[in-house]
Image (cartoon, rainbow, N blue to C red; front, side):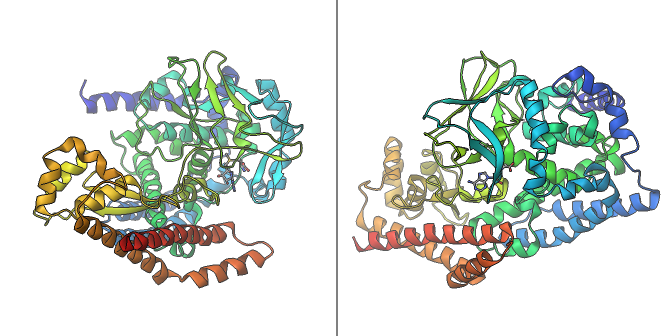
Amino acid sequence: MGKNKRNKQQQQQQHKNAQQPTAAGPTASSSSTNNAEAAKGNRIPSLNNKKRKALNLVIQAILDVVEMQPANANEEWKQYVELQPLLERLIEQEKPLQLAACPAEDAANANEQKRLAKVAAFNEWARAGGVQTDCVEITTFPGYQLGLRVTRDLAEGELVLTVPRQLIFSEELLPEAQRKLFIDFPTHLNVTYMLIIEKVRGAASNWQPFIDTLPTRYNTVLYFTVEQMQRLRGTSACSAAVRHCRVIARIYASMYKCAYMQPDDSVMAGMANLFTEYGLCYELYRWAVSTVTTRQNLVPRQLATDSDVVRYSGFEMNPMSEKGVRNSPMSALIPFWDMANHRCGKITSYYKPSAQQMECIAQEAFKAGEQFFIYYGDRCNADRLVHHGFLDMNNLKDYVHIRLGLSPTDALAEQRALLLSELNIERKAELRVLPAPEHISGELLAFVRVFNMSKEQLEHWCSDLERAVDLLHIDCALETDLETRTWQYLYQRLKLLLGVLDATLKEADEQQQLEALQQQPAPSEIDIMVLQYRLLERRILGDALQYAQERLKV
Ligand SMILES: C[S@@+](CC[C@H](N)C(=O)[O-])C[C@H]1O[C@@H](n2cnc3c(N)ncnc32)[C@H](O)[C@@H]1O
């Protein structure tokens, strides 16, 4: 079947589905019955023609901005600065929808004490649903919002918590027709879609006790002001941050367009009923996206049972390009377990297909009264900042990305690209500067070496491609002139990056601003995080610069 035809059929099916109850809670049958009235009833206000037209204009303006692919970091920044006031206008004009989806009591629920008040009902719901633990409980921890407290001494390796499959919140809760419709969507979008539906259904949703304990706001970059983002300028995280904002704005505006301005066959049309049936607004969308990016993890689909124990890979945050292939793991929220905060260590959470449950064991010994931590998995702090809204100040797996590329005017570019492809390195690549003691990743070193090779040196290495892997190693035997050029290049490049950081905010000012903030009674967590991130990135780059300088002296 042609793609368009299939899409049309899917769309027709979709519109039919929109008339039907669409979501199912832990006990699916009961929650699906009241769906339509909960979503469509009194709670979703309809906008009059004038307001709708005004909103359409804002959406069109957003689309006009985000449709342009920025060519460089400056254009990316300009686009971000243009986009933000439009999003603010959008939020303002959608206020009636926002108040319906996130009622005023949510605003009061913003701090952790208010969330904590919902925990008793959540515990009851979780226990009734089959969550088992006799050694951790949910409470508040300064700097972490909610977390898990250990109630008795725990030994390393002890089973702490199990969450049965029926309490795992994922796209598998969608009715089958709709699930099939979204099979090509990235899995994290589907769980976001589900979350919006269940949130809007409010008391009609069997997931309400879980949704009530979720934060009402996040520190992800979708919540940054332009001034806060401005302070991130000059860092390697800035580009990823503004790109994320652009992608989310584009998805939202494209879905809106399919719902109200120009229904079409695009993949986005499948999600248009979030607007028409559930009153989606941008505020609700960024909340749902951030809930998913800060809490999601991957679990196997029901059908994938190849191995008994599937290693859970931590809070995987950035699968934006991942396609929801049926056998690939899917994005899910795991109530109760997702209250565990992160500390460096090892992954000790697993989905066990034979028991149909998520199991979490202690990564180390804990004393009664301490906070229970799990390890979310290897992520650099730039990713954590963008998608999780926090930093790991002791991140052993941190790195700073630098972008390098072969010049199209370089007469030897093809030969260099051939040699690089042998090492699985693209001609334009983001490569890693690492914390001490490594400093320079093998791929970065190899790229710079290849980049600096003379014609003869390239011919020599291309004549025996099997040896190319040697270029990844620090002690690879190279001619002295090439080694010198390599370290000179790295030295200059690192100096330049530190210069860019200094041009936006000097190190002394970062320190001073951070200290001043930390003395305030209720400082902005985002402001602190941005300054801390700058210092972390500066330290990695500065240490690597010093290392490059030492190598030059060797
Ligand atoms: C899966 S949730 C954990 C529960 C969360 N603290 C809550 O109140 O719902 C992940 C979020 O917890 C916070 N978090 C987790 N580990 C943290 C850490 N080491 N430092 C600061 N915040 C952390 C971040 O806001 C992160 O996005």
